[in-house]
Image (cartoon, rainbow over all chains, first blue to last red; front, side, top):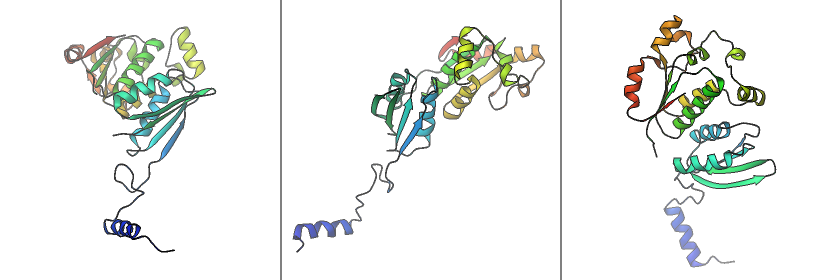
Length: 106
Length: 132
């Protein structure tokens, strides 16, 4: 099988410019991680405080998934995320708890 | 994102009021609002170092629910607020004097010092004041 000239050019450019196709959105070479918090059984504002503490020690682009059986979390966490200017990835009710995913944006 | 500073004047020693004060303070602090709490009157005794944890809180029906269901501890919430946000906690100098206490007689790592009510109220003019 012969290599097409345009593919060869792309590979050459990639090596010349040291492109790293695994580069994370913030420019680092580490891929985003997803951290999980099982806060089922914890009462307000426990799940939110655990989320904030985890985000504090996370990198930009990392995601935190919180499992909470506290009904208020489904609205409190999105409200805080909007205020703190992070990204709300999703809020899903799964049986006896909500799974809320937040991406650290700054 | 930062809202106006929040000033909480906590005078009641009832568990329910201490709890809501701790919740407001910690949530305000982690939401980028500077928060200051002034602890006076019956509330100061809740923070006495000599009081065992199981005897710290007294309240009504909701206090029993919080205890039985394992609601977050008010002092732990305040510590989290200090760790994760801008939260200062002051002991009323008058209440300390009446007890014959110093700040060292209060639970460790929570108080920023003693303060007079006049100073606290003067600072509170800059923001929102809630009294419990």
